[in-house]
Length: 258
Image (cartoon, rainbow, N blue to C red):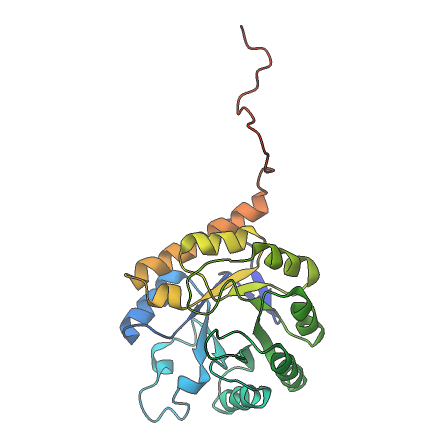
């Protein structure tokens, strides 16, 4: 990945800045091909949907743990106690002490419950987990999560699965100014341009699931997302030109013959 600096989270380095979910695919074969095309090195797995005892077929059978870092996900949890319990269950089943922490406050919007999320973060950090909390695009919440020990903050671009893209880039920018831990946009990405916008803002990475899994061609979309994240990050590092309200000639008029 030419020109791309590594993403550093929780003492680990990742060449890819794209994190991919493993739900909603039509079948495990498509999921495997999409993960490969995405170039990701970290995948999320919803703990509540995994057969942790591995006695029957499990999604974990289709994820190469030597190739991908597993990021257990507390999707579907609605209280701090419930999220902490599932993170512990994943650890006991041999999954990493990393967690994409979700505590949902409303079943219709699937927006996070900030109070419960902060409480769960504090508990899991104390227990030695590397915590990546999914949060609202609120710089105050992001700051409090960082102070609680979160290894990164993951503000939503838009509601989960909506495909609406980055609805409030200004707030994402404020979060980037507020915290020092990595900022990874999570939720709401619909297509490659959304991922590029997130990276051009200066975000450290993008996490997505639905945009790839439910695309007309998941494998092609995974490749598009990989390229968009790389291009957006490179453009951010390059530095865009200032926005102007009027035209500016691309060729200097100095020395021109009239």
